[in-house]
Picture 1 (tube, rainbow, N blue to C red):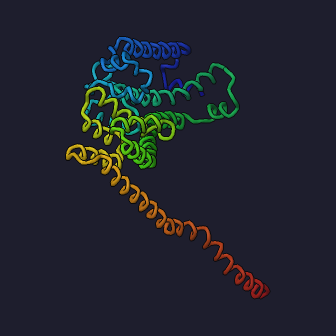
Picture 2 (picture 1 turned 180 degrees about the vertical axis):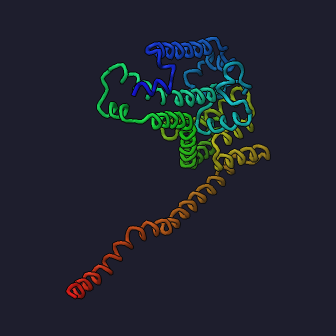
Picture 3 (picture 1 turned 60 degrees about the vertical axis):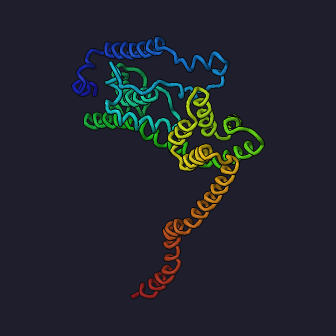
Length: 333
């Protein structure tokens, strides 16, 4: 078994030296990444927040607001990150929609992708090496290593590399959908709380901050987005750009409509409380209509399941007695 694997991977003929080389390579990469993070200059805006005692309230999501503008990868990062700026922008948009922001989000994503693409096949290679070294392995593992043909083993390594490479993208897509669904379900309640706070005499910024702090446990995504908006405004950004950035980060239509309502109310000088009240009423109506739409779709969706499960039983009940009678009648002929 080990002979054909050595012919497949000649570098393994060196025995234990290959593991030493792999360990040295991994250690070098970890040292380089750690040194890079250590010598990277801190963000001035983050230093100002820490100086005023606000750093302890910032989460990893909040700190992502204080990242540097996206720049083209240089040096060794060119081998890890895509060179196309449009592809990086699309990936950054997906990461922000999933709740991962910051200047190192794209790099970490590709590090995970490359690490899984290399690590999963290396698990099989490690099992083969342990089998050759005589280390005790469970019975199913021994059977798998000894009975797998050479071609099948090579196909398995290729399959594991593909799974490790595409698994982070699949996970990211699911994370984006889950976060959007959480925001869609929690945003009407958050809007009602903002409306009540504004009607009680609080300003819009104070109301969003209060609602964000109150919804930390019930809806972390909404809380993070509201605090992100207030952090950006506190750092000197414009309210319009902060609200539009929140709508772009979430990718939810209700949030985009909320941002437009607030901006139009501020631009034309109308009452924010009245605008929020009207929009909250419209959102509740739309939420009820969506619930009715889902309820009306249930009979159509259930018809296929019911027909697939009930029709065979009904046919058996109807045709079964007839078949039995025919068998009794013509069985003696």
